[in-house]
Image (tube, rainbow, N blue to C red; front, side, top):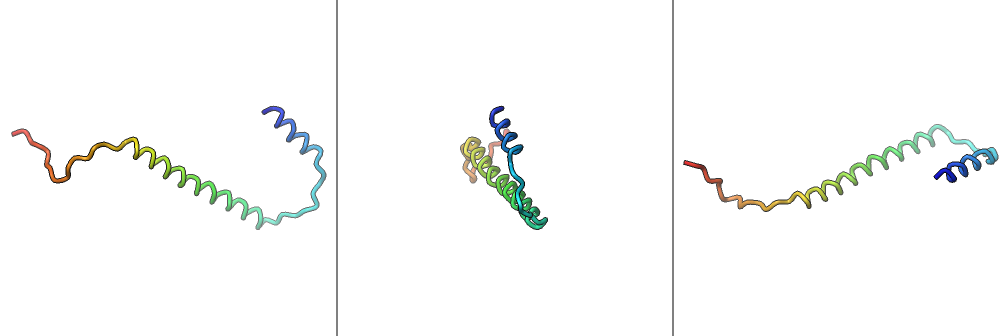
Length: 72
């Protein structure tokens, strides 16, 4: 792990300047895409978690037409 950090740092020090321009609209579009991916992932993994929880929490259902017995 440390070697990867050192490699990234070395590559950042040795990089040449890029002659490019990123306008603010592109930056906000990128942030919007990240937010959409994050929210989508939360819903997706939430549904999976709910499905798994339902599988393991299922119990035998009583017949709906029977009424519980009352002590008289």
